Image 1 (cartoon, rainbow, N blue to C red):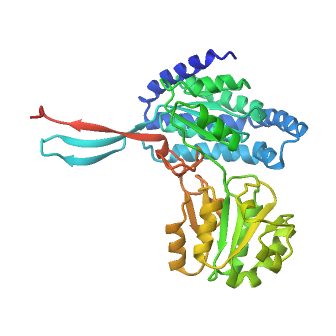
Image 2 (image 1 turned 90 degrees about the vertical axis):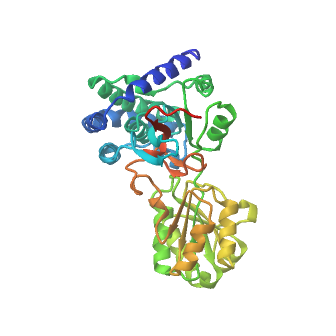
Length: 417
């Protein structure tokens, strides 16, 4: 693909976005359910394409976390199909109006929810993002240009082909969902400057990708950055519950952005909790890194200096720090967290409220696993990602986050004096 084709891609997307504005909710839902059926029936084809990507990834010695994100199997394909049906069942935000009231002039002012327009989504690994992002964009009336990583090229191609074939079947412009498979970075660089066609860029991946997009784009960017998530075990915590939250958050799936990377423990319960916690973590093969106080209370694999905290491991590793107070725990999270997801385990509601109020993160949780920080688990059906910037969305981005509002004014011939 030549660099000059980037303009054609964005122009096609802009034209397709115009056609999506006239689709009814029923039409959109029918298409989404049809895509789900096609995905299910094409399971063997999808797994075959994914196997090629997995073999290449292994030959290139990609990390276990990256390979886990890349892998598709029957269960994950079923999950993608289910998420399409869930998105179809969600309320359509497009067209929803709210009144700002009748003004003194006699005009009635409303705000009406509308699609953003054209979205450029740039992401690494995770072929399921191809389906989830396309479904959310389509349901919210947006055209989307998908640029997945080269490590998932075969998987993304077959998934995009299924989506486009379904759009054509229902007489919808297939350019409403476009997937770019080229490894030529200049194509992406050109797209990031096509602000006349593209309305929003969403990068989802590592530091290198996010920095490249921020430095290159002339289009507004919503970052979906690292997940340096912590569990803070308060002095008033139920320690059995805290252990469950720790093991689930750290070990259920280590290569995802809502997995725990840090454990912060109040000194008053550290003696009772840390040895048990470390013993259980080691059972799951987790490497233990900790502060000086942690190393005094339990065996660690590495003693960390203060500036060693704040790493996104995406592996069986965890950083532990013992703190003297709730305020110190909050300070630690503010310094080393990534504004993604932070958890407190405590039986003291006042302290939980203080944590939730004080911690600056897109998702704050009380007595629940960080693994619930996910659009599907939080009632969004699916997510296009978890925004760690605050304009215009913060946290898991579902349908409503892919829309904006315009003013609608109704009058009866009023003119301004």
